[in-house]
Image (cartoon, rainbow, N blue to C red; front, side, top):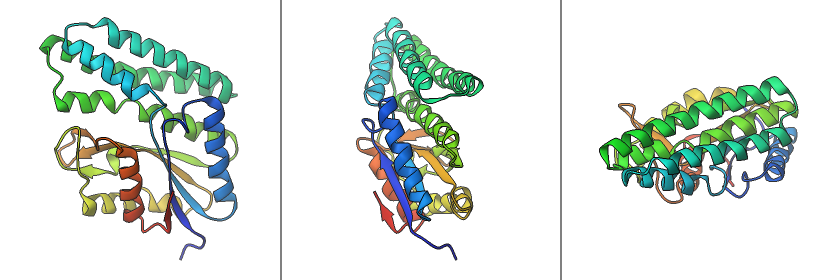
Length: 234
């Protein structure tokens, strides 16, 4: 039986929005694991990013493709600055930058389709808006590893199963519990490992990306806390 407490700890957009804030998140997580407890970090997108992603998709639906291109550029510039300030190893910075560019290329592809169709469907919006949180997951996991904590980035779409109500999906509690135990419990059973997972995002049984609506990251943390039978959700 595992000793110590299991905590699901949710960090919002302001908490992960700057290099200094993300360092503080890493310190908090390290403190809990060094004390012998277990932590799962649920993270939001950097403050303002989801709003910008929505702005680009909405403009695309109105026939304007310049806005989403500018959003990608601005987001990458911001991400590059955080990489410069947080990640020491140049090869790791390059790896994270490449991963971020791929994520935002997917966003651009969705927005281009929206522009052609002149319609931002709820399904398309969920795909577009789900591109913010994974950037933080990858960066925080890398930062923790740099500091000596074995952190693992986990795809929320592998764990949180939802219905098909795009923009306001409801998790399937039983299916999410099953996947949480498969993907997260083995990591928690290994002393000192911290899983990092995106809040707000899920996936239907047939593989469609969904979002949990307003306050979705808080909802994600509560659902995962329940699924893992956590002692506390912060």
